[in-house]
Image (tube, rainbow over all chains, first blue to last red; front, top):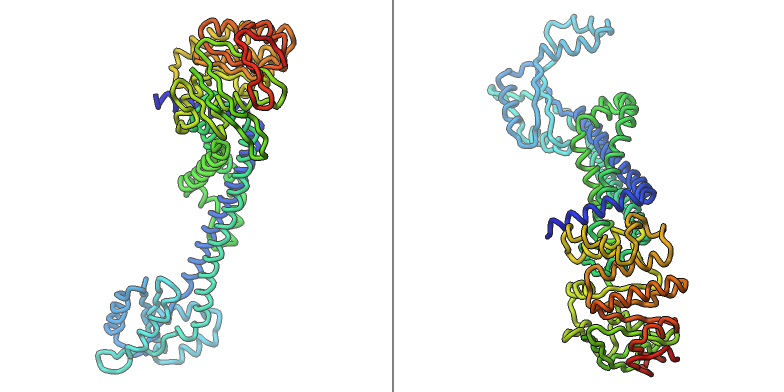
Length: 308
Length: 226
């Protein structure tokens, strides 16, 4: 019996959808706009995250060693730093590597290179490049290094300087920017989602308002609430599914077109690649939201006429 | 079968629609309820359909107080009553067939019953050729015959016809009354409210006359007298 009822409700929902073609079309138009806003929000949050990650990647903390620091002491310190929970990576740059890097950086500057060749020994010390998981954690690592007052096995200080304090303002500013843009993005997302959901909800409510006479007739012939409401909810779900698919189809050419622009503008983030590689996820979110918005709006809108 | 027991209905603006009404309807009766506009005819039918609750008094079907029924049972109760309105109230998005099938489906009837009974009732009202038309493609008389087909398809105990001929010409009016009489001959109670003197006089059955919410006449074989 239940399956017969469900079958009948689904069939009625389909008929509603097809026969009220114009009404269906206008509801879906509004829903496509809503779901496109949702899609745009997903894309902008992906862009924001990639950009912030790129920026964060550019920041590190350098520990400069004195030129005569023994390598095994440096490696021991590297080992200790790697065990700290907030540290993500520690890269060791040897004295020779530091010199080679320096020469490469100044290869057009003959004067500097000449001055360098005048010296008997390599004037540069080895360096440890430390990256933490969050920019805010650099301070802790710097303090740790400062407080430890690192001595080599021979009892002399091996660390020349830690460059955190020179970079402190830049790092702090970046942490602030990252945190506030995340917060702002979140608030903006919530507001836009609420606004567009409300618009869709009102559109569907209007559509059902037109059917209020029909609902009263359905009740008079003895239809249960399930029977009255079911077809409207099914129609709402259909609006959601089809609008979701239309939205995804529209996003294909849009992201394709924007792909190259975003790649040059946002440090290697290609919107089109993001769209194709996350298609499954996007499909679930956009079509899923469409279904939920359609079903819940219809459910609530009909409820009003079932009360009395 | 149906018993109105000292029923009054006073609306929120203090209009008295029904004033201490008591009467009984027996199985197989054909009752015409007549009266001026505002006499309380529509309130009375709405009360029978559990659309309105009495301010005082009770309405019984058999021994059940219909206004004390829980929601779920009200739907079941309504399936025992067929309703026909002056403005037809068909579902505009459904074909003639589907309008009638809908009433069967909500009553939980099997698909095979739907397939066999809908054409059968449409034949009774002589509309089998318009089965796949939409209501807007039908004339007033045809719409009303669809409404009657819908009302009888679940073989209800009672048919309430609220001014069913109000929008129809004399020939269609005559047809509708003949159909109602035929249904009554099969044992269904018919409760007809109307303004049409000709209709009431031609039926020659019980007539209840309402005036300002009170029953002023109740003739077993009455005429339309106001």
